[in-house]
Length: 387
Ligand SMILES: [Zn+2]
Image (cartoon, rainbow, N blue to C red; front, top):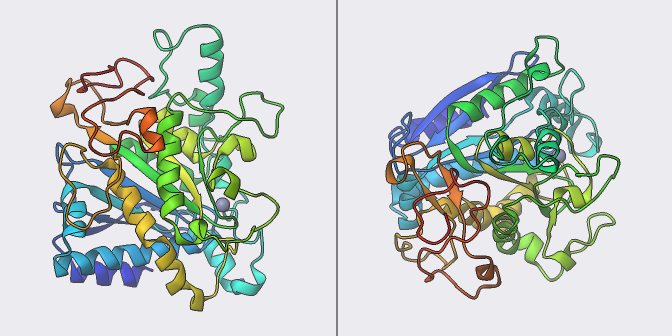
């Protein structure tokens, strides 16, 4: 993986940078590929995007897809593909292919046939990283029940509770590295790539009723999240295929291959909920394939299944006022504002289309309407309609 990243960096030195966000428990570096027209710099007006894969080390497809994606972006940028040139010029993309490198090594040694459901899922210490982020949901919901939100208690940028910061807290080094990373870069959009099912889930991942194993638990930005999840699910060839079969027992096709995470099964301490509540980055989870560890021979087909979704999803951060590049499918894009264009105190965040647009009524031509900026007045700016 490191060699491949180095090769991409050598081939496209002007638009790539490899950096590490920390080390796993066993000391493996957690490498990120940055792809941008000015690598190493945050540019005002340019949204920061991330893909994270391999949080569960035995779910290997996401890692392979991100390696494919970096090769593809480098190659197509050099060829002058207008869609890719535009994406790379207007977005700062960060790809973390292996969040749990120790788990991956365990699964890799066993191979596709033997790694199974669990081996390599956890870190070397036995921690499931998708349960290891600070639970900010409970504090938010308590404050909501007491009518404290948003004036006395924030509904985003919620601070990390003190217990979580103690040296003896059960927080994996991999989790700490990702939290530092989230705090260092003003990401606005992300997806977390998993495997073992074929569905896209969106926050909240944790049920609001604490004893319930599943319960529909939407965020205040539910329309945006459903939109984002739908973008991925409808452009993914495997999910959209009429011939697709169930992976296990759940029939997600009836709901368009998307589901509210908590309505599937509760996940306290998930990365998605943390990202949404502690920063302002909207994150969904993509379960990429029934098989967590597909054979190498299946990878080209899986890349084809996911290539358009991976690109289209990144394009959701694009400024909606700019016309799409030639050949880009017309989509309704979320749009994004940087502090320089709105209030100087405003953090970057994804702004959202009207809910009616979710049924395709408004379409890409709808002018500057933003109806779903519901999190707080401070969180949203620069739009005439709602905030
Ligand atoms: Zn997983």
